[in-house]
Length: 120
Picture 1: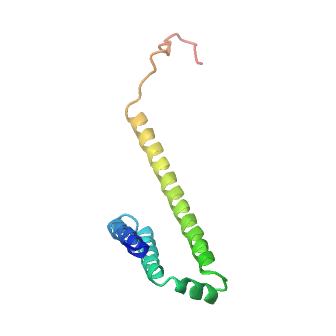
Picture 2: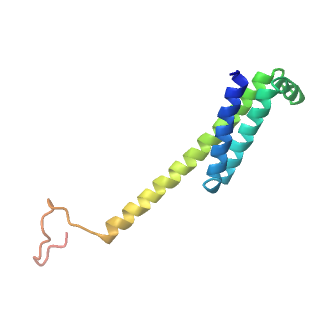
Picture 3: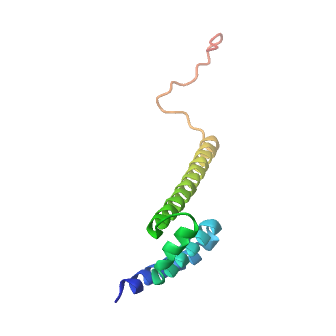
């Protein structure tokens, strides 16, 4: 088995994953599919990376792929960060609602005093 076949199979699985994820996150799904498709194209026509790189002002195709990898990684990091923040806000809101729905006096707290004139 050649390395091109192995890489194509792996990229086909990534593209399939992108299709499966399209209902969850359309932007990420499209990026996964586009990246996997570009990967298949470049696996079978590796000299095209240098041609594309020179068209974009980069000297080597490997450098262009590295720059693209950095951009995609940064996008994914930002996307994961945004989802993490959203989940933290949701957990905070759910916890707040649960606490307000079921208020409990802590067992170590003394019972409230009914003495007149004690306004503390």
